[in-house]
Length: 604
Image (cartoon, rainbow, N blue to C red):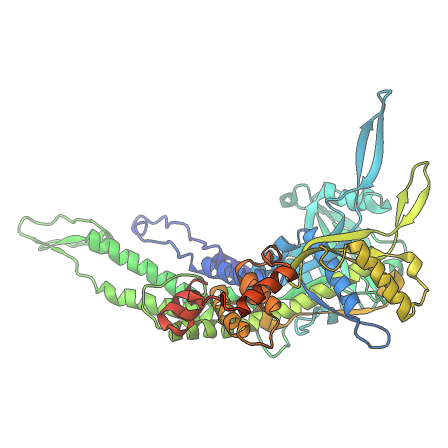
């Protein structure tokens, strides 16, 4: 199959496409419905991975090949700011689903400065038009790109950044294209629905109208990373700069090196890291799904025939086969006997369906992992083993996602350094223009069991200055006082933009962190560990209580329930005097009971 044929086939399964009812009257009674099992399994698999992979983790390295953990914290904070203030969550969700359904999924990472015209009515009644920054379309943006919009140079080169060139081809509305390219001198040659073609033999251009496009235009953007070229066309008309070599690729890293602004991934590899595209999860279970659909249709047809059996008379006359349908009756001579047709045993069909469903579970995800409580009885070991097998099956996809998150994080870090560590021009009262660095605030961040707000300030006065250790400590105490002390709910980073721009950032995520976890079982294990560690004299009781008792039960809100150090000291004194001990946790004690553990696992 071609890429588009494979996409259409897999998307039909995902969307539970049903063939139209036959127009043949003899076949209209047959059941042609399909099961939504394919759609349900894909949505369940996507839900397993969406939460733990939203925020990339960053590693920072300076020009001396030394790790800078504080700079990494700053980059993580800026990434969180951009994710929380964009539609990244929805784009990422759709990218996960696209990777499960299509042969490849793409995410386009971009940073936009878009302006809009606002009108203001003056006191004299005149209307004043002003161009201002459009906060909806500006800033960090992510776009899901359909698999058929990206054209590549080599289908046998797995890595996107190693492609000699890529072409983005899509259809956009005429007004949208005009808003982007309308000021170009060649815009006058563009009409909606009309493509301009060039014939090399005669050296002539001619137009071709496509009535199916309506008011759409074909936007084609050619990118060549090695030659550092990015050239746009609309309906075949060149809309780049006058010199071809001046069309530089927009996305660049902190070393001013060009990159394709796309990250790609998929479900399973097709071969040994050679083929560009992937085998989707839908493709993985397509054979079992088609067999399940066919068997279900046969079972329903057999059920119809059993409930309304066709009758025929035994005697004279000929009975045509087209009279056999549910409830049919054929008249024959008066002496003929009427006999219902006999059908095979449907139990064998139902048993076959069970086997097919088991095969579907093996090729995608088990019902236990989907959160369904099955009627069949299983021991806790069998349930735990089923979960382990499902995680092994999904671990390959976890590795694919980890690489995808690394690529997205690297592109995001490039845009942050290029666009958010530089000053912006701000107009002051009196018409004076001044450079200003933005401050970024990210609330509701967890750190050592406390919910705090993190603030990043870029300080241009720090550029070119060196600080002694004594000066560094002095500035640290000043920031601590500005934050409000050790127990404050705020953390401030003051950053040298010049130093920050020169760092090398690499996003990393451990594939093991992506494996779907059983929250109920994790809570039970932590509560059991809490009892053991509280009885150990060498542990920090406050940290143990926060991380192993309160945080699992009230995630992100443990600071609300923690006592001050003075109150903790009083309670510890009371404990030493024999006034109380940490109570046993009934939920944790269930770990030793296989049936109870089974229920904990099944509540996934």
